[in-house]
Amino acid sequence: MKFPDKLPHIGTTIFTRISRRAQELGALNLGQGFPDYPIDPQLTGLVAAAMRDDHNQYAPMEGTMELRECIARKLHECYGWTPDPVSRITITLGATEALYSTIQATVGRDDEVIIFDPAYDAYEPAVRLAGGHCVRIPLLPPAFRHDWDRVRAALTDRTRLIIFNSPHNPTCTAADAADLQALADLIRDRDILVLADEVYEHVVFDGRRHASVLSHPELAEKSCAVFSFGKTLHATGLRVGYAIAPAALTREIRKVHQFNTFSIAHPFQRAIAAYLEAKPQAWLELSAFFEGKRNRLLSALAGSGFAAPPAQGTYFQLIDYSALPCAALPDTEVVELLLTEAGIATIPLSAFYESPLRLTVLRLCIAKQDETLDEAAQRLRAFAAAPDSPG
Ligand code: PMP
Ligand code: GLN
Image 1: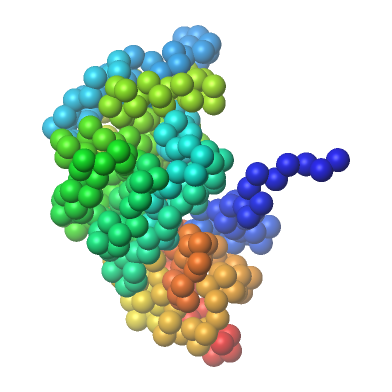
Image 2 (image 1 turned 45 degrees about the horizontal axis):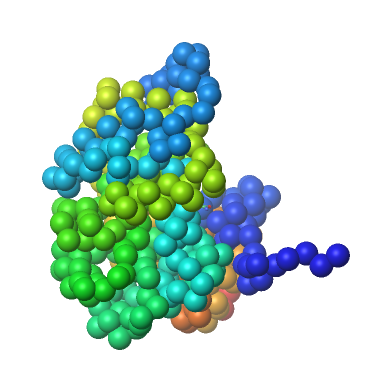
């Protein structure tokens, strides 16, 4: 029997593979993006209470009304705009499902989707399963900015979607208002939608403000913006996210959502709504919290030989080993050496490219206890200073 292989070029994700290796080797895991500290006990209590109160049957397909109303209020506070919770907000299984359902709802056979290279790994397989293909526009190092002229040159009659992720995983850059304007100018008078991956909306550093498509009236009418409570509540395992889109697009997204996940864990939705009711501005502290983590890691790595341009946002930090003896090795090999010799798991930047550039850059997750970050920095310093350091 020959089994179908609809995604022949896809294996297990780099995050899962590196997490498995970290576990096997007992290494510190700064690879996959997830916190290693507990969530707010108040949220734990609210989840237990929601289950005790018997919110254990199907939630409404589009999400509980309380949670959608909370989100509408939150978006008003953040971006000065209140989406109608009935027609424009859909609760999804993490941001991953919001991305997937939106792509299935909007992309058809032979359609083209613009993504930026390097890109988060979930976009391309979803586009392929929809029958389309991705056109990759490079974000060029070291600044990893968008080249909007290049995007313009890549648009064709078949372009359906531009996937725009800011703050950006993995480059840790944050787009600004000028980027939003360039994007809006580009798609004006064209049938092209924006899928805005804004899961790190509340993690921007050094006084920056997140440039959301929802704060741009023209883009808000042509975009689906996706968000994740996994990031906002330090709880990646709850798997609750949401999609904000114009009503007509929301109808199409829900057609897919209802046969994909149908509805999202009811007690979690209840608990998150109650939590945001009790702590309506829980997200306000996130940027300062993660900026502190970033600064701690940067100071601990200063003078180590690893270069580390400060992240502008996200809960990651890039480090560059081009000044170390291992500079000639591919990033995948340096990741393996760090795992086996320094006991620390990182993600190679090449994993996010279709045709990797010759880069010497690794991604570290900073959503970790201070002690974990200190220990990681010490191991990285020791690796960099080892007299028999490879290369
Ligand atoms: N988009 C980006 C850029 C991400 O980094 C992640 C997860 N780290 C997701 C989407 C998926 O979010 P979720 O865990 O809510 O599915
Ligand atoms: N988004 C997480 C990261 O970038 C990984 C999530 C996953 O493992 N699918 O690390």
